[in-house]
Image (cartoon, rainbow, N blue to C red):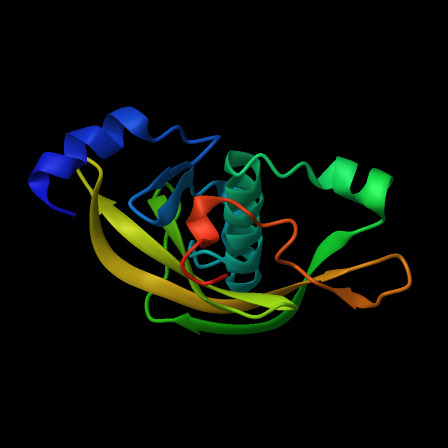
Length: 162
């Protein structure tokens, strides 16, 4: 990020809510003791949890109420496929900035890219340490894949859902 955007990001980013800025969703979290293994680094499975939290935050920012979707329409989002690459590990006390970007979509699925960045002072992205590509589908109560476009109408997905 450019320096003039750092202050804006710092002011806009709420650790618990996340924020959509310039076509990406940003979600910030801190590594706690429970997230680490005996060596003091983040246990690999916890990256999946961190990315799930960021995706839930994205849906919250998009005003998609997953409880209502399930209760009223019997629909839910599920992960169909994931690719995870860990280049370097985060450690206890690190702050992680997760950036979620849309890559591709069809009627039945959306492909998201999630990037876990270390951060410098001033909320600057520093080093990309973990990367994931995640395919999300929507299913009904009978586990049939449904069209996802009708739910994700937000401009965040506008480019890929045309």
